[in-house]
Image 1 (cartoon, rainbow, N blue to C red):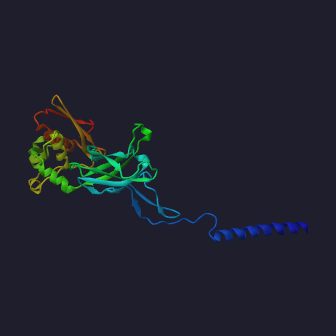
Image 2 (image 1 turned 60 degrees about the vertical axis):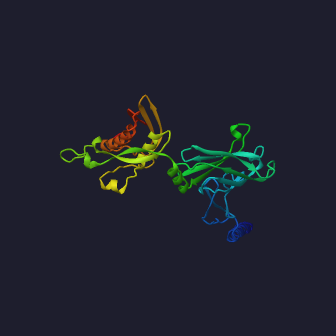
Length: 314
């Protein structure tokens, strides 16, 4: 009989535990149920985006948002000169009530620099409003970067910080700048396969198919690079296309990174991450010839070399 009571007692305890567990989880106890937040996003000052986070579905904090916040311009906004920059930053971002502000074009060239000034007591640990004004000439690039640097009088890397914001330059300003610039004429060499055939009508893949088209570029200290960059855009008129002139340019992500001219030898350095300059000796040769002939119109260029050396290879 004692043994039966013990079995009954154990069974009762197990039953109570089972009922309690079912009741607990039935009421939503234990692990919390997943919270589904809206899928919208918030654009941060540096151009990145953050989504909503459970359980309250508030937006996740932006990078540097707790240190500096820019009210105008916003990330990816189209800007023109003069540019007024307003926002607020923690007192630690300043030194002597100011911090550096710089504007770069899409190729990393510095366009303008100034200092942002605190509009109230900068020694506070709270946010302090600031304002800056930048004046710059419209660059050739469509995009640029606005950089707000934490003032770092120590010069120590561990004390450095910055907020980088992507911006666009006004197309109207850029076009106006180009119209007002002095220009020079150049020849860009493209290809007409009808002029490059042997007696049997086969494409010879030679320089005979090269055709010069006239263009103008702004006067600058880098006319050779400017001409080649214009060539790489591959912009042909409808009339030129009707004449049979063609080109494979532009090639995806191919860009001219720099050029060095020494003793008549022009070395051109390209960025071709997708190997778009390769693909058969005929194709690679024609691409090569177009750049080489465009460069050699300048009398100081006697020979053209490419870096990396595997460019324009079959």
